[in-house]
Image 1 (cartoon, rainbow, N blue to C red):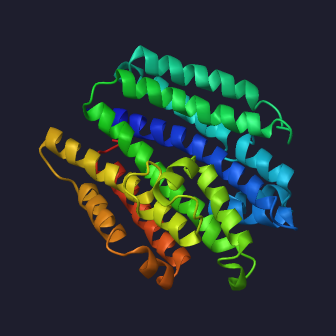
Image 2 (image 1 turned 180 degrees about the vertical axis):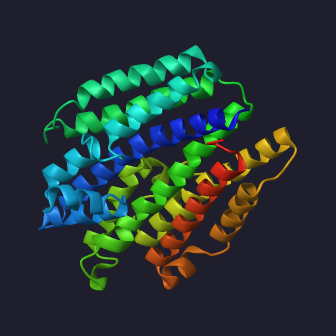
Length: 312
């Protein structure tokens, strides 16, 4: 496969995953703000965690919930806004259209047209839940078409690499919102406020039902952190996402008869991720652990682009 085609598939699915996860960040920020007296302060943390704080501040200065939501969903000056990344996904899909089934192309194109209309103007607070649901539904629609119609070959594996690089990065960042900006003080750890905020994160990744199947009604920060980081059965956990990276690198290595450095990096990240239990991670510092994971994921992503010559 041409590197340019592999890169188009990889980035198409990174952008689709990013659109959904950005919607999840907005939902988390909105719910968390409801538990705090200074709601606008929470959006600074969300923007910092999504790595868009500097660009937001350069344009807007003061942070308000209304402007932060607009920035993350609709603003064309934000390269990671939902509007921009869905457009980028569609452009990449058009670039690699011959590698996609008709169902996948039509699903991506339809999603772009629907979301372009929904995000053509500022989203009101009243309409925000409906719009966030629409973003998640359109992402799921494309994912379903892809899973149901695509041949399991190198095309499929490059798309999956894009999905799980982005998902691992975003799950880490979502947990980092909790560890880095949510708690007003160390005394709040284990309090009812702390548990409400952790439960909000579970809802943000659609994991509250799965969590209760595993832990029952006992909502504890430690258990939730373990579930989101280390549970290999949970499809948005870090362990699951990095495990899928390892699997798809393995399939690509078999296809091309060589094991590139990115595959070795993914394996090392997976082994390191699962080498510590949750208590050791919390003792070390959850934020520091997440920062190490983010650096590892970014390194795998960058090396993948080099190994498969995405821009050659």
